[in-house]
Amino acid sequence: MFNRPDQSLGWPDFIPRSFIQDASQNIFDSNGTLSVIVSIKDEPTAPFVPKNPFLDTMKRKCNVEENADVLFEVTEAEANEENTRRSRVSVPFHAHSQILQMCAPMLAALVGPREGEGNAVVSISDIRPVVFKYMLLSVYGGSVPEEDLKTYAKEIIDAADRYSISHLKMEAEAAYVESTIITSENAMNNLLYADAKNCALLKEAVMDYFADNGQEAIRGVSFDNFPSHLVTDLLVSTTRRTETRMDDDNYTTMRVSQLRRKLDEKGLDGADGSREAMIAALQNSTAAQPSES
Image 1: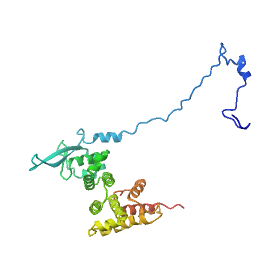
Image 2 (image 1 turned 90 degrees about the vertical axis):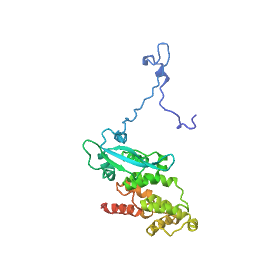
Image 3 (image 1 turned 135 degrees about the vertical axis):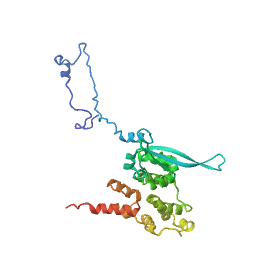
Image 4 (image 1 turned 135 degrees about the horizontal axis):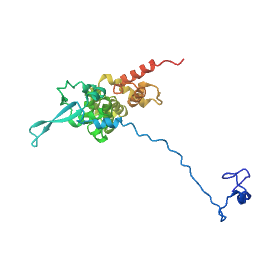
């Protein structure tokens, strides 16, 4: 077992046989049996504290009539069986004005004075009820199911953009980018849509397609309507493909997700803005920091 005198396995401190056999030590039982008791120390685990229930409580309040003081009536045109006439169907959604004021100011701005003891009633006809349901759920801290987020991505982007629910808009934009393959057939339509809705991530996806598929884009895409103010975005995507090493601190060539993450880490607003706006916010934040002496 031991190759050298200084090599050993286990604990080197042994009890002498004479010590064990010494009756005065009371080591053996009366019948001469040596009992060995092994115990394992149970280390205490870290204390468990349940999470703060506030968020779950908020989500449970979404579209609950009790204590609500705002009633949204969201209407949608619905065709009859012959598809010849369309009737207006109204779907009610209950909300709380204080929550709207804090989390969705533009929705809160639609709420007029209440009539007596009743709720303030707001009619909405520019959003489908299923989309409004998810928008209201997001306002209350809930999450849209992943598949529905992809299915209704553009409608959610439109609604969230209209009512400035920026976090939901970015979630839907990310889902749309992940589920959409940019091709020569849809590249320009997606670019114009992204530019109109100020969707920086979608613009970046289209620019990446142009940078990676130059020949295909030249043959299959009409650039007659290409917005001239987006040339810089195209150059950024092209530069990423040609530069062998990118500077991690260079905001100019950072990806949109990196810029958004840095804004979030610094506690800055504007993550749903354009590349230029995000870069300017980060640069101003860096410039405003006191220099170390």
